[in-house]
Image (cartoon, rainbow, N blue to C red; front, side):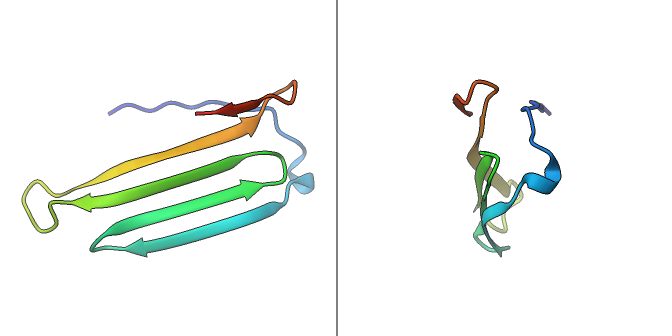
Length: 77
């Protein structure tokens, strides 16, 4: 298993507002979600069920996130 954590400079949490939030989940097909915050953070992710019902069933995940850096440069991963 592999994990990565990155920390972005944050505004005070009381200043940050949620501008967009979408979520859907279907155990047969997968899920997706997206959010955008007033501090420039954005994230979207999609998980698609592969080989439904088979022994090798899995969820293929893809997505991205971005944030505004210290010098107001957009960073997208």
